Length: 412
Image (cartoon, rainbow, N blue to C red; front, side, top):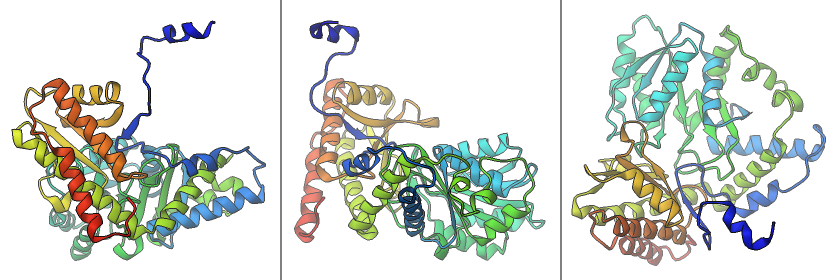
């Protein structure tokens, strides 16, 4: 085929320049991580790979802040959910699920499909979950039928983060033996998380968000209490099973052929986090999130847009959910941002379908990358005649500039 006819093989118009990615997952992958993955595969027991795997597991422990076991799966976060469930709970067991948004409901649906009964603790999709409601549900369970609490730290549909430490403290006051299982898929690497210190028994994560890697790896960390529950659990499982994965034999650690290229990439992503320093990573996410909120506050003065999370202290530092007024099609905003402005943002999920869109500001993200997204969103409002007050981008720029004046050593 002649070169000048290639453009006619697609109905999509040719776009110049680069695309910007501000979805809440997958997120941008640093070039150094991609370069680390650009390598040949090797023998299953090649010492170079085994060393990389060990470094990756040890690095994950540093981010989870645990001395417990860490398991790696060739999966997304849903696979890690299932691994956590089938290794600790049997059909007929009861799990308590605080309603924190779309993903707490999805995790509960998975549990039900696996024969696990669930009890919901109703919550507000605009507020973080009240730990005392969880404590009361456990206190009412005098027979200790509840075997685990399934808590999502940050729900990307709502853009809200629940206080894990406060939930554990509430569980302790209720003197209930249930496992605390926490989904950190959308929060790990963006905010503080202390698995051992806070008393979390099982933690779930995935590679494609704050850990700055491509999709494809799911992680589960388990403490001694969770391992004991695993050993006492009787149900069919194989690929997800923790027991053979604790054998310290390379092949069994991954239940077969290891995802070698992914492991090299994840090791590099973890190295990037540690070089920046976790506390500085968290601070970078906080400032970028605040800049995003400043922009939305300006846009929303016209009455058609508002941040879903009502309390600033409960807002996610990795993703912001923007609600749209009646008559404003959030899906159309997302489509124009992606297809016309070349900036990918997230759509509304669950009850927010068509009524909200989401701006991700997590992972490998700096101020200019955020400005590009916010400018694309504001341009989309103009393009679609969405009621808004201009100047959101300027407000974001001003917020970060003022921060930099006080912290001259920052580089984001």
